[in-house]
Amino acid sequence: MQRFLLIAVALIVALGAAHWWRHRPLAPSPGMLAAGVPEQIDLDDGASLQRGDVMLRTRAHFALTARVLSREDYHLDAGASLAPVDLALGWGRMSDSDVLKDITISQENRFYHWHVDHFPIPRREIETSSANMHMIPADDTVRRELERVRTGEVIHLEGFLVDASRPDGWHWHTSMTRDDTGNGACELVYVESIAPATP
Picture: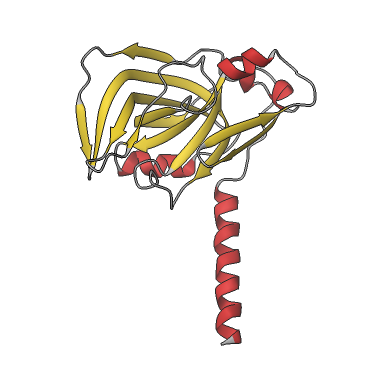
């Protein structure tokens, strides 16, 4: 029994090490790596997409180039089968290593958190130049690309902002602006393509 437990612990440690290595952070040079802002075209009459028992309603065409500030994988919560990864993304000065070295960033429970001892840029700029986004892969190819994304990487993605719902009453709404904060401020993104971007 003890040997079985030791093997199990060793396997868990090995899997954890492999996961960390695959997603180990990059350390880009200083400078703005993603100068543009997200592009959004709102839809007056969006389409419906079925994903298992989840209905998605497209709200806007969405595209952005951004630096990955953090990533968090989910396996057990109500949205894990739909959106298995959240990416905290930054653009403008929130893609600059000189700025980010003074900001502590973390994710948990589908939220993105940041902390500073002193502000390297104005608070409002941090709030409007970064966001936590729940990623819904459109297909297995996109899912594999999402699995490769690393903190510090600059990515370009395209797809739709969507609302999600199930017949049992469960629902998940996307933010439609980058100006909001707190509960409900995250984007729910149906990702049709994602790839590394050239800064």
